[in-house]
Length: 113
Length: 112
Image (cartoon, rainbow over all chains, first blue to last red; front, side):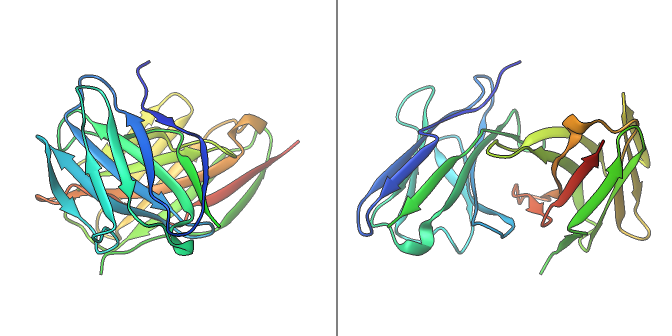
């Protein structure tokens, strides 16, 4: 069964550094998403992406965050200058169309020290 | 704002049925979902129900939706030790908003 793949599985970075989290969505899916889960908290929506542009973003997704689909298969989340509070599990998801169920990857655990 | 609530813990004996409950506040969602998260793993889509349905059955899983009470449940028949995980209820999208709103997750522990 096709799946969403994320790399790396674990990323450790120092405060203030830039990180890029990578995702390969399911190939025939058109909508892409990033969610995050801070330890002990709910899974929270960050951003959705369709037709090469952001379609929605939450208030968490401030100017430090950006997303990109650099080629036909990858979907990336960049955090420009990481803060301690960015430490979380980041999940990528994709859906076939906007109303279809979301399929999630295994996540990237980001640790900011 | 919109909220999705779940109880935090559930323990059952192997072979028994498990029922995980969820309540939500926003009735405009298109779908309601159940995701499973095993330790260190991602969110696995278990099943989902369209908001105009009352029930959906998929092998050992039965989803019941009570729209009047805004209550969703997941029943796992013949629960196995491999079912031990965190189960998340989520709803969405709502109109043009594509995001899902998640509950806190219910930790299911299956005892031998």
